[in-house]
Length: 111
Length: 114
Image (cartoon, rainbow over all chains, first blue to last red):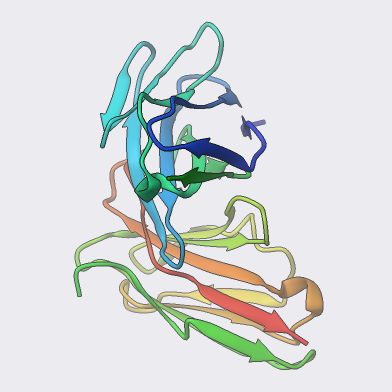
């Protein structure tokens, strides 16, 4: 079946530290991959996406590369800010429109 | 409005009561989805509409859950005879019709069943 496995949190980093949140997936065929972010008290927002192997999605300094050989889509940012504190969800969609989400990784950035 | 809206934002129900949760999708979005998000978990798919047609309801946990979208716009998720295990955040999302497109999420309705 289709599933997403995310690195467990919570993650606490100092401002300007390097961030990696691991995400691996299981799916047949060629899914599209997404990272969504949920800020406190808000709904999920799309952060970035990639639709085929070797694509790199990027937004707001965050990046993730679709690696078919390792079935991974790890999220990275070179220098986190306090405003990046949120919960991050990795997700995939294969055929149709049904999304499969990971369990989420909570990030807290301290000044 | 510009985004997906949901109401109410919070709902407290006594066990056995019926509840109705409303979703207003982004204007022009053909596809509408409902998800259930338990505490500390990711959203889990419940059901999917394309216009007024419910194309997939495989995620509905029991026959107490019912969703409709009669005019292809606003949708209502109804839970009959609520149970404590129904306590969760219910998320609505909408998207353009094309497959694998980004979904835009509403803020959710937090349901607490006492």
